[in-house]
Structure formats: structure tokens, C-alpha cells
Image 1: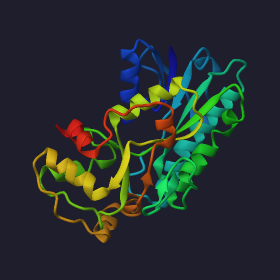
Image 2: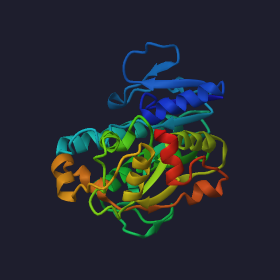
Image 3: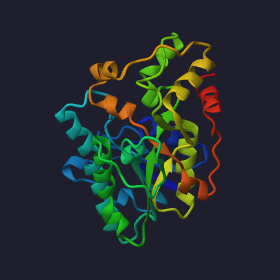
Length: 295
């Protein structure tokens, strides 16, 4: 099997590359700099440069490229970087794939659970309407950029609407884990907002699963959604620390700016399509996931 990955150096891309290599797959990593390894191939989304022969013979293309949403304060300039880093590369990949005589049959396109915005206790499936937050708007444009590939009947396109990824390396909860280990973790805001989560192990297993199964359209890559305070307390129990010190919403906004609204948003998302496809999570309960991540 030959898989081309954009965004292979990120958290999910690195783990996916390792999983595919362990299976003996031929992995091609798209990089924006000059290649330094035989499995790397250069592309330049800003200049619209991607040699179609790089994709020739690929069984699947996985596009995970995009600047981190929470890495820096969401100024107007940073918002543009977050948006363009996703849409420009996605549009280039989709156009290139659709223009090939024999395109890769599968495009697994990165996306995010932020598509649904802030929805309280509403149960959200792939059929639910998208929200109106900043990140929901980014996801809309991100997924729309793949339209040339979606319109090609020779290509199956699935959108990976990934939730909060739990990993020892931190991931979306990176700033929180050191506080938890010090016994300084606690509810963020009210703690009643739902966080849809998945372990990194199940995230990459699900992506690998979707290469093979005939699923297209949005796919919620989550295991479960529970109130955020339950996630914090489950992680704290593993490292034998209390989790009682609340972090008020206004304090989060002072530190994180507008990104705090994404952290405090409530998304009670269920993996309806993933479950129906036959995928079996290894970590479906938050206590089990916390133990796997931090033990």
C-alpha cells in the first residue's frame, strides 16, 4: 500500500506514519522545504506547485496540514494563517487529484469537531448543522476547498472531524497537563461544557480504518463526549493529584484570548458514522483513556 501524507510532521501525522510503516506501507511525506529523506516530496501550496506524479500510484492521500489553532494568540493575522494554511493546501491537493488521469481512489481530508460550534447539551452527529464560531467557519472553508475531489466520482473523500486528542505529548491539552501533574488542575469555566475526545492511538487507527472502508463525507473522530470537568478529574486521578481549583472563564480569556471560547465551547459529539463503519475503539471510557495516556 502507498499512502501520501500532507502534514506528516504534526502530532497525528507522525503517529499515522509510524503505524503505516509498521504495516509495511510505502509512506510519502509532502514537505514544503527541500527534501532530506527518500520518502519526502516537496510541494508549495502558496505557489500552487505540486507535481501530480508524486500522487501517481497512491492508494490514499491523507491531508492533515494546517497551522495550530491554539499555538498562538488568535489575532486577525493569526486567524488568516490558520485559515489559509488549511484551505490553500487542500485546494491544491483536490485540484491536482481531480486533474489526474488515474487519481488516488481515496482522499482523507483533515477537519475538526469545531465544525459544530458551541451547542450546549445537544447531541451532535455528522448530520447536525455546522456552527457559527470562528473555528466552525474555518472548518466550513477547509472542507469546501476539497470540492474538486468530492465532485470527482473516481475519488472517495472523507472529512476527519477530529475532537480533542488525548496523548502523553499534550496535544490540545498540552498547557493543562503540567498543571494537573502539579495538583493545580481543575474545572475550566463551569466545567459543564462537553468535550469530545479520542486517544491518539484510536485517532490513527480510525484513519487507517477509513482508508479501507467505503465511507465518505464527514466522520466524527471521537470516542465519547463528557463534561470537561470529568476529563480533567480522570487525568488527575491517574497521577494521584487533586483537581479542585477552578479556572474562571475570564481568566482563560486573559491568557488565551479568543481561543478560550473554543476551550469553553460545549460539543456533545457522537461518532455515529465511525461506529456504523465497524470501527472498534480501544479506549471508549474517559477513565480508561486517561490511564492509557498518563500511566
